[in-house]
Every structure is written in structure tokens, then in C-alpha cells.
Length: 188
Image 1 (cartoon, one colour):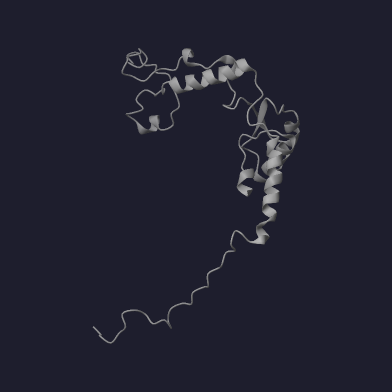
Image 2 (cartoon, rainbow, N blue to C red):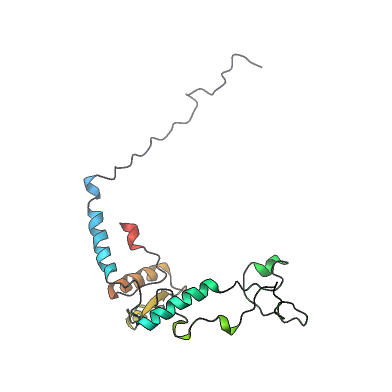
């Protein structure tokens, strides 16, 4: 053991550190043009409806569906607690076994899907805001959408470049996009 050896390496042998990059303060005058762009985006978003233009009975049915959704039990699959592969995806399969306790509606088993749990027919398929979703692939398909009652869902096969074009076109037409990747509020 050498007592004369230094415990820490010498500063001469240490690699040179890069200087820190300084970030500009948020209150600089150069940051002023951004709020103007955000204001124009807000004006465009102002004409996009937040909720569908529905009649009073339809709004009532949507609220009824909302309460039914809260009361609806979790439809567990038979033996989901026994096998991880069954319980993980949550896909419902009807129990068909002859002596199945779940099929015979024993009280301590999970409930079975039945028609009595359905939502009202007139609002079935609508999104919670009341819009009827329409899958869109091209800008031509956007032209046929009624902006007051329908909303666009951009298909999953559409790439990012065309998706951005579709979102911009929908914004110009005043059509709500239910699965946007660009948030107008993120720019503000």
C-alpha cells in the first residue's frame, strides 16, 4: 500500500467538461410571437363543437346510458382467477360447461352478459360527447361529415404525415377529431 498515492485522481487527468447550455428566460421579448399563433389556434378551435348538437331527449338518453354504465357489473370470464392467460385480456366468452356454476347463475360467480344490460338503442354507438364516430382515411371523406352530429376518427392505417394533413383540414372545416396527435393547447 502506497501512502503517498493520492486518494482522488488529479484534475489534469480528468476529461474536460462541456459548458452548460444556457436557456433563455421565458419573459424575453423574442418569445412574444408564440402567443399570437396560439391565439389563432384558439380562434380555429372555438368553432369546433365540444359536444354534439342533440335534442333534449337524446341528451337525456346519454345521461341514462352514463348511469347504466356506472351500474353495470364487471363481466368476468369463467376461471379468469385461475389462469393468467384468461383474465388478462378481459375478452368475454360465454360459459358453456354443463355443470358450470357461472352459466347456472350462482350468486357467488361473475355476472353473465345479457341483453338487459344494454344501453338505450338511440344512443348506442355514440361517444360520450354525443358524436357519431366516422372513420376517415382521406380528406374527401372529411367533406361528407356533418360537423354538428359526427366526429372523425382517423384510421389507424394512416401515417403521421397524412394524419397531420387530415387534422389540419378537419380543423378548417370545424370537425372534431376524436384521436388527434397534435394538441392545439400544447403550443400555448
